[in-house]
Image (tube, rainbow, N blue to C red; front, side, top):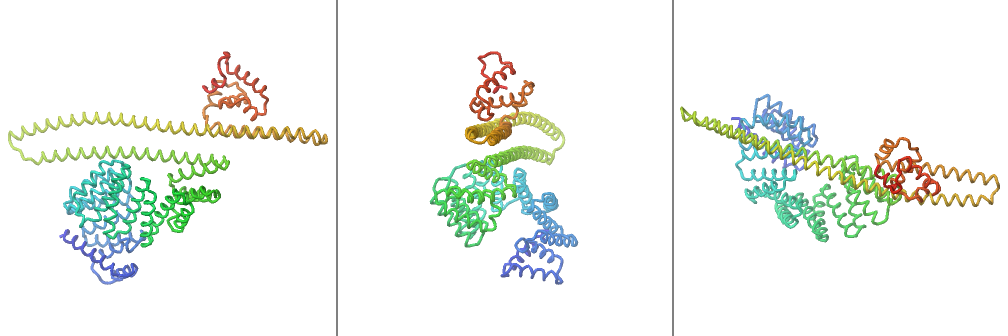
Length: 630
């Protein structure tokens, strides 16, 4: 009886939705349903109408949708309608999952699961399993999602629904980088599809196959699947899907170097997006058109596209749009507008915690300031770039570790399920007398052997996993070391450039002070004294400022040098430590003289004293090489 009610309930929902579409205005449809609720209707109809009201096509506010569903649940519990209670729990669970509230979401979904697994039809069981799988995919736990999708396959008989599940499996495996499994599931789906009856699922499978082959850089296959998917979207009248398909085709054509064809496809997509007034897609396509036009050298037209995109509401959440605009102004030589757009894009990326965009845009800002000799800001934003890059690397590593753990748990659970299934099958066999005893003995021996075999295989598997994990960690450490070495080389280059800049600056200051002293001979005695005081102050302040800035930058590059030097040679004076730092950077006597205002002879004397302090007796030992090895 409950199942009959469930089927009737489904028909009522479908009919109410059909009636709602007759209303010219969504609000009038909603008002009509609310008016019906105020009349004297039976509880089952009230439940159905409240569920309809909770649908996003009529009510967009989350709290209001939740209120309608809870009111419906209360009424269903009042009349003890188990099928309706399960269905409403499922709706509430899915609503919470839309907000990524996994605690409440899984709580309600599991209540529905308990009912459908015990009392539901095959399609109802598959439905709740698909909902649970999709919920895990929203949380980026795709291996658990695959586990539920595979279970759903067992309860489904209709080929169309099976094809849909294979499509979901293909998408989930693609998300964790298992492209072979993804392709095999999607192709399994295509074999079950009736392209006329299941045209939408077929189009999605073709587009997903195109996406995988694009990621694998097999552009010919990717393009063929995208084109086939777009033709299906056109026949279906799915303009949103068609626009996305055109955008994908444009990406493939651009990767093949076909810029004119890429621009043509993007323009077709833009015309469709304008036709249906979809601002989200218009913003996406305009940004793509701006990029392709800019790369073709038409920077003014690229700016026109970007400006149009910025007028749409979605621009406020797209930092790359502003970064692209800044690139075009840089190429046109308008530095002020360029930095303004870079900073706007950086602000959006930072506020939305978009680390990938923060990494890219902060590097562009640092390059801009460096090109304009603003080394302070250049250093500030290169530090932000490095920090965001490190954070992204950490996120990637953590995600890979979690994926591997989930994969292992999923495979382990699948093995245990298979063992339990075989064990249950053996238990269901009716045995009698002596034959039963023999069979039980044989089964016990087989199970014992199987357990030993599984334990041995698991031991080998764990050893292999441990070895693979160590190799992955070694590769990761090697890559991190390579990155750090490149960053150290870059900072060394920056420090060397800075030293050359300081040297030139000090030589200039030295010439100016000499000119002042020479000119002072023609001044009054009191003025001559004042000039000498000014020259002395200038030398002193310049020397201290230069050393402070050099010291900060040197510590960033050679973090442990001072600690090692003080540990091994605690009796060195401050001047000798500074000289050691200069020599560590392989600076010449002339360069050191320019920074310290010491004469070359004085520096040579200081080098000799330093050799004695460091205990270097052998004259064949190079002082610079000795200090580099500390």
